[in-house]
Image 1 (cartoon, rainbow, N blue to C red):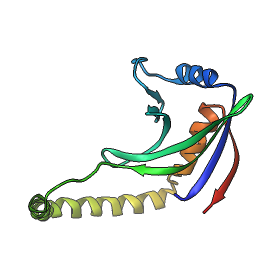
Image 2: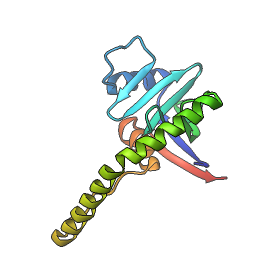
Image 3: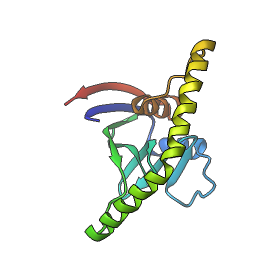
Image 4: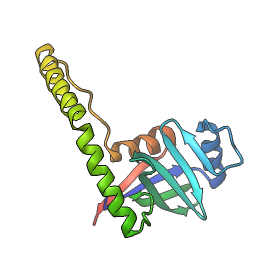
Length: 161
């Protein structure tokens, strides 16, 4: 995600924080984490991280902007970054994990083949019924949804590196 996004929030820092309090369905107001439907806004040190999309068990895509406070507005300029777990396993543990995954894969192969057959038949049935699958939102769509629809910001411009 090398594209830079720029959003403007019309108001002061206090207005922004009251907007977060108003939108958040967070029951723990003492924490620096705000839950807004499927999104997360959290304060880390002196930065604000906007959780845009989950990716895996404990990773995700985050919009991490630089904030510039102007007279009557705030500018959020940044990129979407993947933040995931750090992997500090020893080589011996990695080899053992790969062997276990290999044997489990062999044991689960009949189930996987059955699921693939079921999915194939289901796909044929959907084509016969002419049902369309709903379009999934991209990470960029989720960022725009959070910033524009929930936070009340508007996009200013975007640059590609």
